[in-house]
Amino acid sequence: MKDIVFQNKLRVARAEKRISQGELAEMVGVSRQTISSIENNQFCPSAKLALLLCIALEKKFEEIFFFEEED
Image (tube, rainbow, N blue to C red; front, side, top):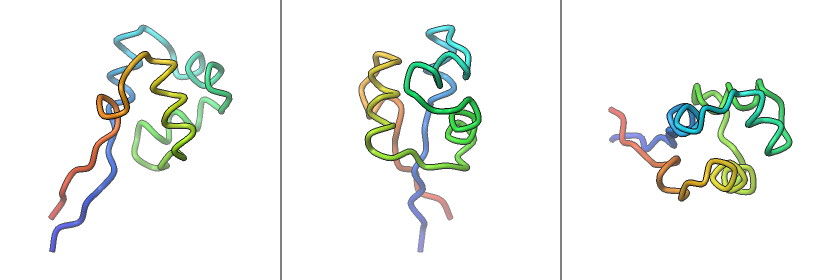
């Protein structure tokens, strides 16, 4: 059976806007380490944080966050 894993393209979206992890963290009210952890799939953001990230990066939810099957 395949696992479904929550993935993101946060690093790419952030780079497109030329925003540092620290700048994005400040915009949404979290630490730079939290942004790093999300980008490295070590932390799954709450729905509220995910939406705040989308707003800050001017992206739709599905442009940043998605599910992927893994073996």
